[in-house]
Image 1: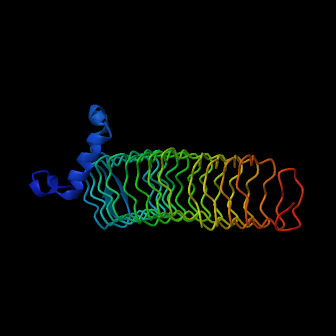
Image 2: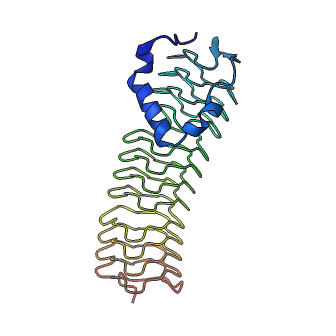
Image 3: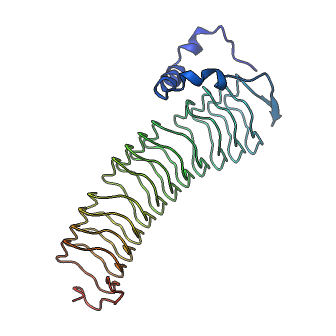
Length: 298
């Protein structure tokens, strides 16, 4: 079923206003013509006709092969798209509010100005996707794949990113305040000017990341991999770094006061000017590769 294009309420809905606002801020107006529906082609899946402007609110599209399908201006609110193949699909101005996208593969899809509010994105593959300025605050994105995605200025505050793959993602100027990144992979991610206070990084892979001057004081960073990362001038006081990997990390001028570094790895790390007071280094691997047998290691 198609939307009634004469319905003025649809045009003035909050979702539509947000989409149009995002279009303007994304600077996509110049490319508008290329994003509009390219035709009336539809495909059928689970008894539904899927295509541009389709009314698919609440539709069961789980497990569908929708690769390359044009869903311009489609209404997919509360639709079930779980485990669907959505690679290279066009969601321009589509409304995905409340949709279930768990386990879906959405790589290469055009969702730049789509509405995703309250959508279930857990375990979804968004590798390489452009998602600048999005509001995912408080959402459950556990297991989501955002490898090499663009999330500039996005709000991920309070978001559940447990087990998420953010390797190589551009998170510059984004907010990760209060986010749960337990067991997540943020290696090689760009965190320039990102807000990361009160973030949970237990067991995360955060190698080769610029975290200079970061304040992680009091955090549980057990088993976190910071190898090759820049933590210089950071505050790691009272942190738990049991079995953490800090090899090859830049730890110059870091405050480790009261930190628990038992069984951690500091091999080849730069510790010039670091404050190492009241630190437990029992079982840690020191800069020269030797094992610390006591709390002080000296």
